[in-house]
Length: 146
Picture (cartoon, one colour):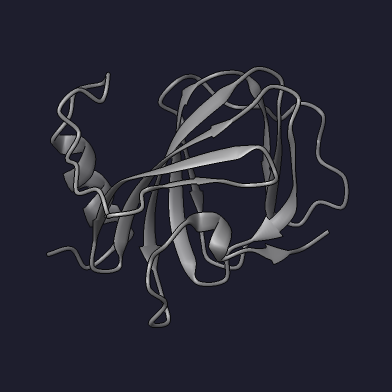
């Protein structure tokens, strides 16, 4: 149905308004995971190698530098304030932070990223799983980069 993450992203959000009302749902049998990092993941949609997850991060939590070697993703900021970093910095620039609501952050597979939630934060992560890896939860495809 979709050949790329961009096509999936456009299709997924074309079916909703700015407030995500009408978002397509295709929820698997076990859709929820709470990780020791303080993330709560809920799979909203999964079909083939494409997936949408609603992810929350509680205030004060820090997500260490990591990558997802088998997942291309784009994160859409829904609510909250915090800092999010992507790339090869040895120390995060102090002036980077989550953009306005609806801000999109593409994260290619294998690219390091990390973040800090100042308040409760929520994102929708649209994903394309690669290399024959079956989609589960984004934190299951985790490579520590600290």
